[in-house]
Image (cartoon, rainbow, N blue to C red; front, side):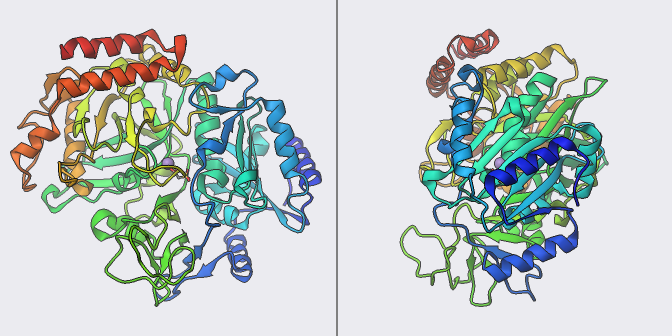
Length: 581
Ligand code: SAT
Ligand code: MN
């Protein structure tokens, strides 16, 4: 396979002369190609076959122990003007970054195969979809891209039709953290990543393209590229709604997107459109529509079981690549929260000995699986027109303060709600876990330009449509004094989603507070939940003193963006303060 696109041919030739691969393989995206890659990786020891009777076509990849998560401190946005990247990004001048990366790429593919992966983010025939080409020397990356994107021949044909594509160059290099960089050149529609083979660092279609570069394109073209799941909810009467929800990595997007209604919610159906990324466009009628640019999931494994997420549990029993899980004596994958078994080896392949605080599976261990394997998969995920969004939900992981749910007063206030999201850090990125940090719209690690400009872009939608989705904030993670979760979460989150939908339809009551609208005691269906009224009251309380502190923290955070902060956000903040009294 090769191409008629001259720019692509030239780039492949230039890249080959820089990186010196032994051979070049153009990926066609076929099943035969995938199987050949799996065989190659099995031979090389890059993959280990799991129990093929109980887990057919499932494999385990153990990454380098120093390479187990995204590396935000080594991720850069390289714009000519530093101010374009903003205080929310690490910045490097493009010329300097190019010299550095060319040095690291020089000869890095000697003795290796260079894979050329044409891919399409979004349904191939969607006007909202965008293409890219990733060049990589990692067969593991190719196999993951096959499961997670529409890659190969059809994508290449679209590239040849359109001429435009995002370029992504990746090499695992020597996997040394000292020589690891993930660089973005938004003006050049170029990504360069070296020194990591893991997830968002290496699968360049995902966070690098579909969020950092796409958010940049979206700003200039009038749409939104967001870190959001997309879920379809159907009532017992057949009424369908589509919700988009932004939570930081490892805060339950996949679980919410695959929610299984509990017995008390008989007749409700939940289907998954996407679990991580949404591209949102206004249509000619002013309706915001979403597509999921991906076609597979790269989900957190630990905690997945039939109670927390039966759909995910079932979909990862075949044709799945596991990364950094533990293994049982029966050669089945194992992770914390799976079952009562004791693993034989940990994620590094060492005999499992347990020990204080140790986990057998890495906390950021992942499954890679095609979306079609999900029992709750919605065929609308392949609809070129996307789905109409009724509500946008922001959320974070917060032990205290943020109530279970509240509704923003209007779009402008909703942008403030999104911009002030804070969440406890998780194992999805290297660094300390459990510290509260600001993570606006759950995009802190993913917005490819200055947050102040990004918020201005969000605000601009208020002038473009009178039919915008309603905006909400949720927090499933409130804890009591003893550290117990106060809200059951998982399937019971449907009760909250139902209130959200009813608010969108103008059929649910609410009580107005300083921070927005919250459900009153009778406004949410709590039948059969068995939760104490006292606990509910505290889940839905707005404590003025704590919120004053929060507003001060938000104002301080905004100060970090200097004079670029849109005045509307300051006004909204002042409004909340005034209402708090
Ligand atoms: O490593 S990824 O960026 O793909 C997963 C995540 O952090 O959301
Ligand atoms: Mn994510």
